[in-house]
Amino acid sequence: MNPEEISVFTTLGWNGKQKFFAVKQHMERLRNYANLSGIEYDEDIQKNIIRLLKNTKYNEISEKSKRKFGKPAGLVTIRLSNNGSISVVERSNNYNLNCEKINAITISAPDELKKFKGIKFGKHLMYRNALRVAKSNNGNAALIVNNEAVIDGDRGSLMILDENGTAWASSSKYGSIESVTLKLINSKINQKGIPLIFGKITSNMILKAVDAVMVGTGIGVTRINTIDNRCFKFSSSRLIDTITEIFNELYDEEWS
Image (cartoon, rainbow, N blue to C red; front, top):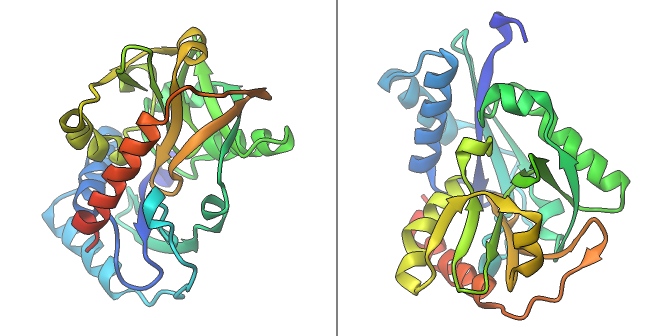
């Protein structure tokens, strides 16, 4: 990637009209990405981003969101380039709205993922390609694996509940994308009696898990059904039930 082409982005939930989900947290993430990438980001730039987000004439969509599962009607991507340009692009969230269960395909982590260290860079091709591979193998999501651990998903993060009642998500030190959704969940899940640990999720942990889901801006919370065509029949619904409850609370708190 040439220096003049460097850009970073973040994607917000969008209600199809003029409301957005977790704006403050996404602005913080975009600032972090910019700082790590050597892209200028100051208060004036942030004001310009917010102004553009507010004043853009969107092609409104009427699809109903699935509030219970945290899935918005649409998505809006904010992109900041090192030449100072800012873009705001909206799209429907139909694919995720229609995704009732995750049928995941595991994909080996590409070299770019390790190089970019969890930053949403450029056109995010490594994640888009991972989903493309998953679809070509009859899946609807990709789980990215490195050193025998699931470090990320193509558009969300894997969370599992172990037999001791502890939830696990991949730590960013293994290369996963910084997740706004996980941050929001983390602030509430402990209060509901489920400790959340960020660490290394191995295949053995998944096999022993009593519940497993994928969470993200577009996917909301969606239960794992299969991984590499292996069907999972989890013995508990505590994790998905608790996160569903959290999303209901966040819907009332974080839309602006």
